[in-house]
Length: 442
Image (cartoon, rainbow, N blue to C red):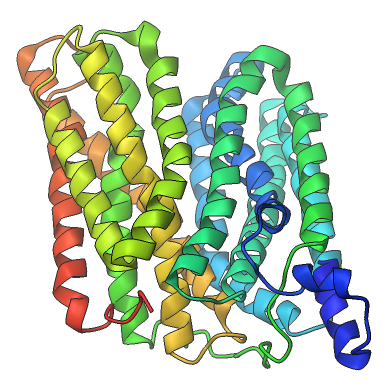
């Protein structure tokens, strides 16, 4: 964020030395991408241990019933999701102030996040009641500070503006580092333990903020007084249309993510290959980001995202015919669906930036828009679990099942339901080509 203070200084002193200029605005260089995107790594890194490791950790080490912990996780997650629009509005106010103020708040949020994460896995209390109270407090710390950092980071990138290609490039740097964070978090806790994981998170947060201090910022004159109207974003019909498409597509992507380990273990009977499959999926997503940037330059944002949705449908339709032992074929499914994930990570955010700009809300309401956007992201995950898991139970599937009817139910929910939702989202995106989504490629 020294790029931010450098901008204000250059406005007062035009003779400021030229070397500072490359960091004043986005020019697409790799070092600018690293400076802006690096904070995405710890923000993605922290999520996986909270969702995957924490329940088993508390059950195995402290004997906390999963039902209690599940209720606590749900309550704190709902509080976090509902707070996102308000956090977004606060971020807009911080963007409108001198850059040092935003940095101070970001540092405080990073300290809270690191403290909350460490406190969750190394609690000073051991009795069930006090442990649940402590973990609830630490979850509130981690979730709210994570949301503040995430929305501030996303809105920072949105304020850089630019054409469709530039907007995708900015988002791709952030999401590329996020994928690296996911890959690191999937390995480190089991290899080095939670102490090392907590230390790596703290170091990555510090490095990400130091680099962000030197990242490009919005051009002078872009920032305007933040809007106080919480309904500003939802009153924008283009945003509402895009949000519905994002929700449908997000649920379609989250259902397979929720069920993939069940599918590998029971349908493919290949539990030993789980790390390979997940690694292929996330690696393909990361490596596909330059391909999607090139696609946007050739055919635009909307058509590129449509193509990614159809690619995902083809991949999961193929997965529906696989059975026990089809490891190589499913690895290919993971690669192709991972490529589609790369588009889901990079293109919708760039489309959202276009919506904000076309509505004339750039420089004043990016945080608010991303607050509602993040609420929708969290709703995607909740809806996916809330739809898929009860449906599987109703259709007779339970983990470890080998009966044909149970496996058919698993295949239908894992493969075919996401295909239907993806096609619905693609249809809405295509139908709106002459409405709210037209011009977002500009």
